[in-house]
Length: 241
Image (cartoon, rainbow, N blue to C red; front, top):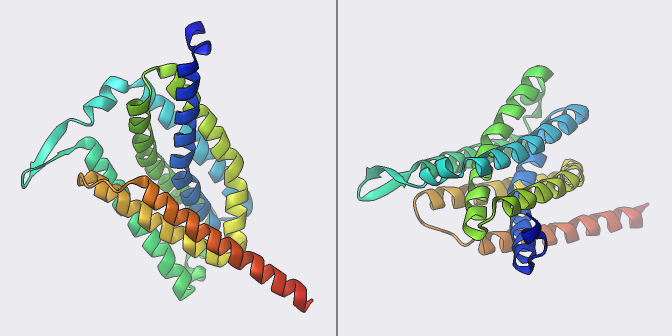
């Protein structure tokens, strides 16, 4: 442990892996911000806290099960000369879940059927939000930790990077969720991001890797355009008043 603290290579690995985990955590933060927007504010705050705590627990748990996790990448099913591991199946299932959930939410936004979801009991709505958070946390955690294993050799560095990234996700989740709730067009944009991320997960499951740099560039560019639109609307309101 002392050797790691005094090793420049270990610090470089920690910084690189932390940055990567933060970037990979953007998916989680976007999903959380969208999924909690339909429940009361106090419940939404609690759901975000539970979701991010589960994200941290899942990641550390997966790190402690490295042998089992590596086993998930071994082929277990072959269809039409294409071998699928448990990791592939989980990524495909998680990607389809994201696409389906985002499409359902986009449909609700476009059709303006908010009354249907508001009519559900609050306790039931909160329960289903937590269930969906658990499902997607498992998928994102698996993808994140397998990436971490490929980048670092020391378990201590992996755990430190994951913990730091989760704390940064926690700090950023509340402002992001508030911004999404206050700007409906931003929520629609976030939902399209989830469709894009879901497609990337399904593609990974079918061994067709889409470089994440392309996806994050598209997200960053679209978010920047939307930010300018929000600022322009705010300036127009000030001019009218």
